Image (cartoon, rainbow, N blue to C red; front, side):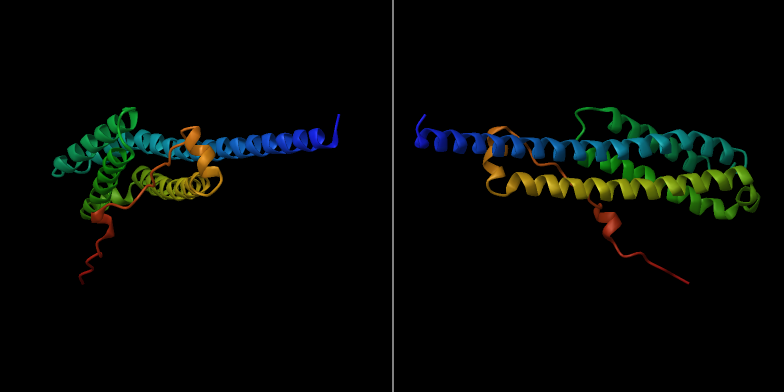
Length: 189
């Protein structure tokens, strides 16, 4: 075998190894994004499971606030429907989850009018768990967005962008704050 043939085979082998490494890197990054999204699902499921317990605890104390409890139940149902709908976009899911978060905040604000409820150990524990879950959801979303950033960057830079385009890798959407969440909070004394 001539020296030229060996050099050509070595270049082809290095090129093949480069393509394999690039492909494996794309797959790893895509799997990290999918795992991060799954982490959000785990926290959302936990929140969905806690809400019925919260409603039952609050129901006995809040006889005049039935509308708030109905809205919370409807928001939970809407969020679960969007979550379970495989055709729902990330924006639709996010809107339903944000509506649920807003309704929870309203419920906790209304409970300020019920000192017996605020003193209930069961309510306090559920409130802490939901608050903790909300924090974990936010952390999971930040982790997801970090992985989406890394993946999207990887499929947009040269030379990976050419290879990613040929293999039909698509960019992921980021979780973003809604317009209502971007507004300044009015603090009145």
